[in-house]
Image (tube, rainbow, N blue to C red; front, side, top):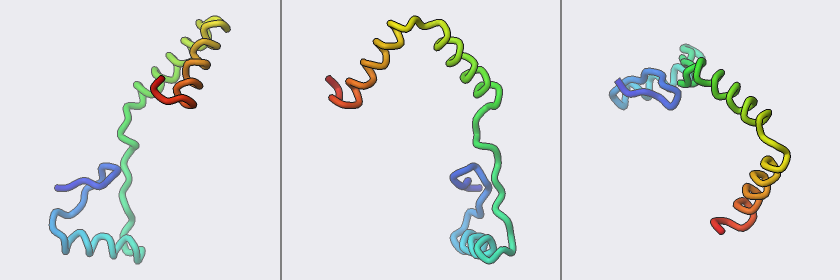
Length: 78
């Protein structure tokens, strides 16, 4: 069965899909949304790692990283 943009199940045939869209539009049926598809544990570890890295960096290194990022944004690949 085909999946929608957020992983929800959709009818495989065109007519069935059109009927489902019409039901959602008129309020006869609600659209089912799953989670955002990301692992909650991985998200938590990623946020924790970013904070730990930021705390570990020296002010000089943070400045170097920020200058490099600004140069990429303003001057492209150079």
